[in-house]
Image (cartoon, rainbow, N blue to C red; front, top):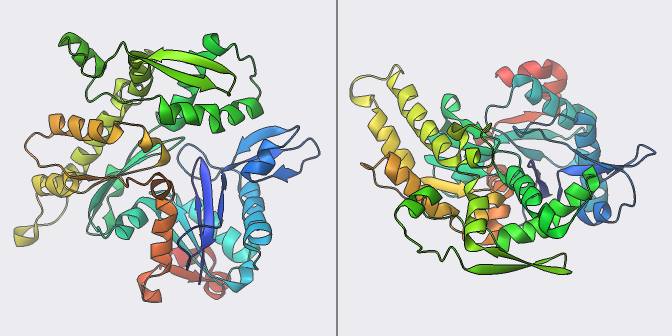
Length: 391
């Protein structure tokens, strides 16, 4: 049995590797009180009377506050799992392309400070892909602070083709908050109030109001097609106090920002919209293969790479749950790659999709042989230090 921890930019999920459901689902942030103490856990943070909100992970999914991460892990072990970290192996999901400096800090935290007996870092999109029985996939993770596209071929992450964009869930939260200001007269601007809003009414707004159109809104307008009833009114109960009415067009426009961020502000580059970033990752994956050393019968052409990835599209991340997003991704890719057949998978169960990265870590923790995982023991780390990563 192992402990598996997934630190996302929005949510941290932790539990035992022999369970189907995690024991801990909490924010990847914390409240720092005036006396310097830290508060973790959703309910505890919601009831905090004072203090400021801080995050643990940066926009690339890499910890930037290692002291807070250590405090959170100790809280998970001591108060939630109620076990000693010295007793069980630990598996942690990490971002693709994790710098060596961050890898060494993970090793120090797990093996030196927490003194776990055996430790493994697994690349999050690879774990998700393998947990679905796919060793080749185009993993599109639409999270909170980032959107990441990771091409995987034959169980290997194509690092040079990984693409990221900051226009994801947190960006939509901000746009929704700004758009609703005049309608709700909300003047609370503290970090705690903004965090609380993103965890309460904004989440409900995204779940029940947002709708991604099947193609760009400008294209629908130019064709005079109103297939979605753009003038239809939708009602939203704001904080259970006030009913706000928005048209379907307003709801679609807000969701469109993730595909066309330049609509929110001209300073945002159109090249970092969701569809453009996905297309760029696919093309770079093909180009990196073309520039490789494979030759003869074993050579893989860019077209074969494109075909393999586009028939194994995996969509994950809590922000990917916005209505219509999966179909829009397929439609956009069919425009960019009309000569290829497309096949996508997005877990239809809301809870399962939110837990997919953790389940991927559980799959890697439960491989039939220890030799199949990249485990590092405390004894090896004490003898070799960070050089153990070079093995």
